[in-house]
Image (cartoon, rainbow, N blue to C red; front, side, top):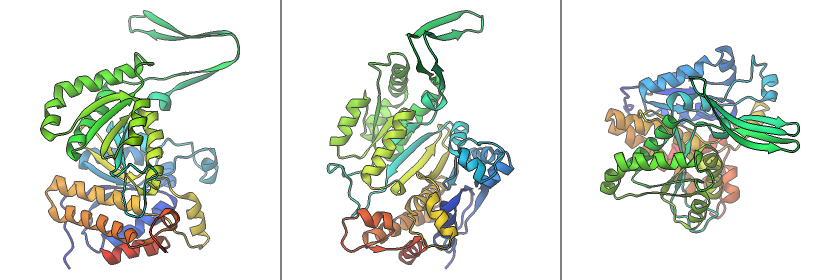
Length: 398
């Protein structure tokens, strides 16, 4: 059988621990037998990030700007324990955060819906996609412990030296305080990415914040979204037969719980962080989520939405059998291959991505799955497969 040819490479970002093991299994069993795979490879494993002073992460993000499509394995964001374990030079930042900042991207996450893995919310019939603004708010906040009585102020010093002050709180005793910020151009990029993605996927778009309480911070998000929609996207949405609407975050949560799904829910950074985990858990598992970072310039980086499965990796190193769910990592590859095929006009590549996804879903719906899904499935008498056996079961159907 002739392998499917690729004309343009995909940026390949390798990762850490058990997901790195799955990464190679997926390539060996599901990709390389069928595709003349062209990638520009970057090793984002923690040891290599340390050796290159994290330059490899920056290089991989810039390569994504060049080639427009990337696929990323899960990576470790080191804490103090990891610094000791890997004898690191320093506590390197999150690779995802670095890549998001360089691409100025928005993260879209959606559950992979499979028969037999039923959502906890009975009304949900279609996937709910979370669009998370990946800049600012508490993630770039400045914090301070207040030791005792005193006044805390927000102070803006303009270039000409003039000051604007706002009292945060006059403390009578110990407390805590936090300052957050965001940027208009980042919010604009977030809005444009959401509107474009809604059009690309033909889904309604919701956006929610708390502008009734946060009359300047959150209200700015609301105003920017509305202005961009009115000026650039209203007619396009009408032509596509889809809608955009804004509502308060608490109202959005209530609506989501009673909806059928099938739309994009855009959230600020912290809201998106929390709600994506809620959606993934309610639909079944973090290992059953697609995740794509989309930039306003049309760059796409596909990844699994979960971590590196540390506990399974340590068992693997001891020679013990693992049953690690590889579905999200498989779908990261299919997402990247499909997008590469779309951009290059390579119908064989897009068709292959579709077939690999179908083979993966068919395997689970036939009752063959990893342990995490077997615990929650409504299918009778599921067959529990180990990590490699599941990938080989998918390969058999493919």
